[in-house]
Length: 239
Image (cartoon, rainbow, N blue to C red):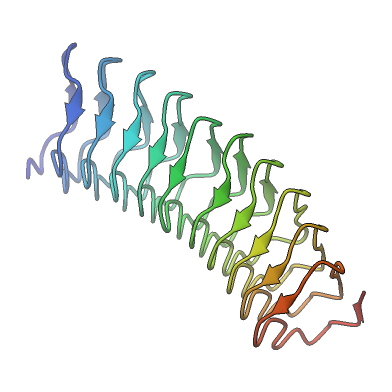
């Protein structure tokens, strides 16, 4: 660890930021990455608590697991079009991050990629992304606006668990499955319309949505698993 490192410029032609390179550099607040960088590996900037912004290179393709996990002061982030993979916990615990856009070229988003980003207010998922990964936004307490494109077919386990500021969500017609605990603990969620193509709703999908008043379930749903609407104490109307 270089615990006193505050600023660094990575030279041109560097293509890889290796595993744990700057992990635990608590005072690192400024870093300039060249456009030659294509991969940021696991834990590369993990726990860089003073890092407030970073310009990700235009040729970047992979953001490794926990790459920016615990960068609790990271406020500004733009994910370039070139990125195809965001691995598990990549930005987990970036507590000051307020907005995020996931671009269309992303083919894989790992578990809890943006989990516990407690000040995240809005997220835009671009067309081309096919699933909202497991626990992707779990614990994002201030997330109030989410844009889900009609390329998404699957909302996975715990994707929006404990997103307590989410009042409404528009699910696109492309959705086929809502995974277990997908919206569990979304205590301000008031209404949901399940798209016609959905065939299965996982266990506890809406558990603890205490403000949920109405829900529309289409005829094509053949499986509603256990505890799906447990403790939805305000639920008045199901159609």
